[in-house]
Length: 234
Image 1 (cartoon, rainbow, N blue to C red):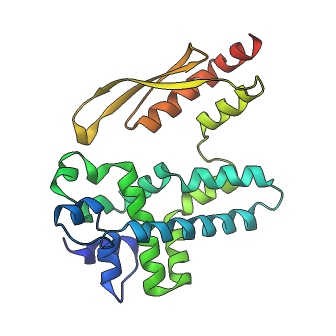
Image 2 (image 1 turned 180 degrees about the vertical axis):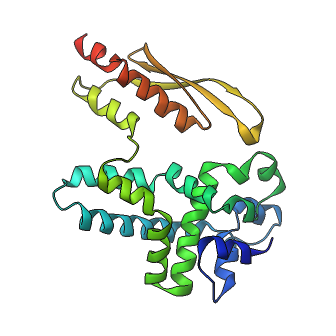
Image 3 (image 1 turned 90 degrees about the vertical axis):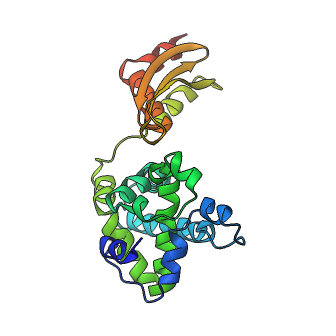
């Protein structure tokens, strides 16, 4: 695969393309080739994760001077989460450029959220090592501009699971269960059907292209239908 195309996508040209090669190498490829540990993107992902957190924390801190620490933490979590990273990865077509094992690819790895998210963080680290702090920061702010702007303006998509959990915490230690009832479709394009139970009582159902999306939709249903309030009254 020609990584020049991907460099155009991310609007950054590497001086040392070995960093990019490693960032785009999934562990399954290394395992399949029986190569030594360290040739995949896992260590870069570790560095990129910390860098991403720091950049987003700084942006929120600078732009939301009257927001509490707790709220800032929630906003940061919604930006640096797996889904957010994977969404931006898809826009950059990162899955197309990943090197992975045939088995992982057959199981839909090129569009798996966790793999795309990890690769995005690895790319951040690769740019950081290749071009320095400022270049990597520019990439993050350019790539996540819409998401950051939405967070600052209060228009970012809500984390319904967290909101539901916080609502129910006032009742004490409440047992919340998300159960996958059905998976439909081929491995590379599955649809998940999830039911939400609180203290054994079903409060919602959700459908999504990932388990996390289906769980969020189930929690949203419970909140919008007032299911949490019914539990609190019991």
